[in-house]
Amino acid sequence: MTNKIGFIGLGRMGLPMSYNLLKAGLDLTVHNRSQPKVQEIAAAGAAAATSTAEITQQCDVILACLPDIATSEEILLGLDGVIANTRPGQIIVDHSTVGISTSKACAEAAEAEGALFLDAPISGGTERAENGTLVIMAGGPKTAFDAVASAFDAMGQTVRHTGPTGTGTTVKLVNQLLVGVHTLAAAEAMLMGAKSGADPALVYELVSSGWGQSFMLDRNSSVMLDQTYEDARAPVRTILKDLGLIQELARSIDTPTPAGDVAYKLFTQAAEAGFGDLDMPGVLRLLEKEAGVEVKRKS
Figure (cartoon, rainbow, N blue to C red):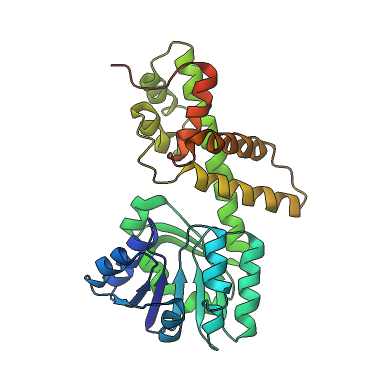
């Protein structure tokens, strides 16, 4: 692949992803609004760019991992953003979770400048970002996917080309539909057990050994049992954002998502009730208020 990699966005996911690019021996330049993270990875060997324009002009491949749609559109599509400073042959990759309309707008704008764009959302959480074992689902030109394979392989374990522009985002939203619904279902189930008088820890042990087991039940159980909601690896507000994108996609293709609709409603209520910054099983806090009981380990 081409040599110079630029990475924009050193958040919970982007920083460990960048470290794995360095570990793979790739020539890495980074840019981030918060300078302490830039300084941290620069000390490990990355070069630092002072602006989006500078990093775009210096690098052959631009990878972006940004927190929300507004930031993605500003950084990628803004007046002095990546695409405004791109050049023919450059490859632009968006690892953020955005809507399909945003992905397609980026692809069209990049193509107009002779550049190539991949929508390549990620899944797996911060631990897998640190371990370099993310799932990467990339839509867009296969030639671009092949060209950045070594970068993807440095960050991910399950890396797939999903098809044309927008399909990477589609697969990620399908994933997030299950994440949201399963998180809500796990919260409901644990609450029902607790309200009925069962030991919540025992409920989890037995259910997770039977057909009720799910990845999200396993992931969220310790947060619920130990009430460590403030350690937000994936906040309620982030899942709510994704569920909103799922609503948008479902309407655009006339597909019913009744469970997703309920999840969107409950996560919205949780955010409005002040639980938006809690880790995603924090939706349970909303349900606990209604039930008049808390899910926690018995002392």
